[in-house]
Length: 317
Length: 100
Image (cartoon, rainbow over all chains, first blue to last red):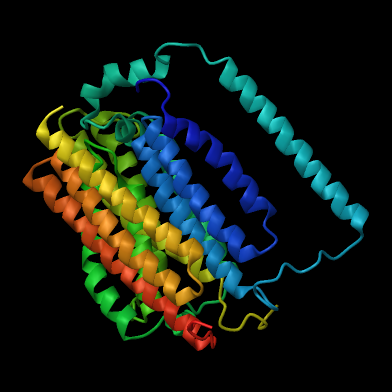
C-alpha cells in the first residue's frame, strides 16, 4: 500500500462521524440505516488496509446480516415503531449505566490507542511465518490457510460457538419462521419474480466465493452470508422453503460435525488433530468449507428468523 | 498513460457525475417518489459507466462476465428496492407531490 491518499483521510473522518451518528440519532430507523452505512464504510477501510477478506466479511455479515437483524428487530418493537420510548426507571440509574458504559468505552479506546502505538514497524512476525509456510497449506490464499489449516482448531471452536448461539436462539424463539415471516409488506409479484431470478444466481455466487477462497479473497463464511441473504430473500418473497421440521437441526449442526469428523479422521490418517498433508489439504479444506457454507447460512438465517417473530409481538411476552 | 487509461478515467468521471446528480436529486427533490426517480435511474447509469471503466482497466472474458453480472444484479436489486419503497409510501397514503 503506497502512502496515505485523500480517500484514506475521508474514510478516517467518515467512520467516527458515522459511528457517532448511529449512536446519537434518536430515531431508531435512521440510526439503523447509518449503522448499515458505517458497516460498508468500514469494509472500504479494510480494502484500503489490504485486507479484502475481512472487507468481504464485514460487508456481508457486519453490514448485511446484522443490518437485517436490526431492521427486523425494529419492526418487532412494540408501540409506534419510529419513536424512541423514554427510558423507564430513575434518572440516576440511567446516568450511572451510561457513565459506566462511557468509562468502559474510553478505557478500551485508550488501550487500543496504546496497542496501535506500540506495534513494531516492519513486517509482522506472524505474516512472515504464514508466508513461509504457505506452500505446505495446499491453498494460495494465506487467510484461508490460517483459518482452516494452521489455526483450524480455532475455527472449529468458533463454529461450535455459532452453533450454540443458533441453538440457544431456537430454544428461546418461537417456532414459526419462513411461512409466517412478516413479508406481507414486501410480498408481491415483483418481489417474487426478483426472488425467482436471483436465488439461483445467489447460490452460484455463494459457491463461487467458497471455491475462489482457496486462492483469492473469499471463503465459506462470506459465501454463507450470501446464502443466508438468499434464504432471507426467499422468506420475504414468500417462496416456501420446504424444509421438514426435523431436518433443520441437521442442517444447522452438520457443518460443525463434518468439521469434527474430518479433524478426528486426520488423527487416524496423519497422527494429529487437523493435520493435513500438503497434497490433499485443499480437498479436505474444501469439504469442511462446503459443510460450513450450508450450516453457517442456516445459522445466520435462524438468528434473523427466530430473534424477531414480528407476526404477534404481544404473544408470550 | 495510454488511450485506454484516459478513456477509463473519462468513463469513471462521467459515472461519478451521474452519482452526484442522483444524490443531488435525493437531497433536493420534494417527495419520496421523485427522490426515488432521481436515485434509481441516475445511479444505475453511473454504475454502468464505472463498470465499463473498470472493465477497461481489467479486460478479459472472466472479469467482463463478473463485472456484467455485478451491474445486472445491482440493476435488478435497486429496481426492486425502488418499487418496494414507492409501494409502501403509496400504502401509507403519501400523495405524489404536485406543483403548488
